[in-house]
Amino acid sequence: MHGPSLPSVLKSKPATHDTTTTRDHLIAGLARVTSPQETPIYICAFQDCNRLFPSRERVMLHRKRDHNSEEDRDIITWNE
Image (cartoon, rainbow, N blue to C red; front, side, top):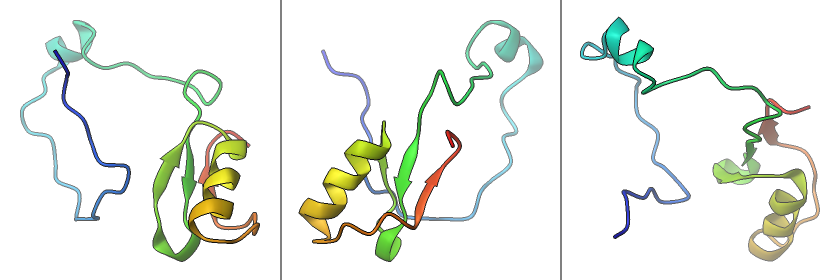
């Protein structure tokens, strides 16, 4: 059985306020704080692509293959 999945590119939309999650939900472990070391995230912001990758190496492979570019700017991350 497969769980829910998301496309690698998401359409942007305005954020909405969470009015249903309670403090008890958070204490129960449905959410937790993470760190850059524990959860690496690299986003290709080249030409508004916005695909997510687990490492700089993977985003650069994507750039070469999908954008025909080796440009290493316009990468959004909290890991560096």
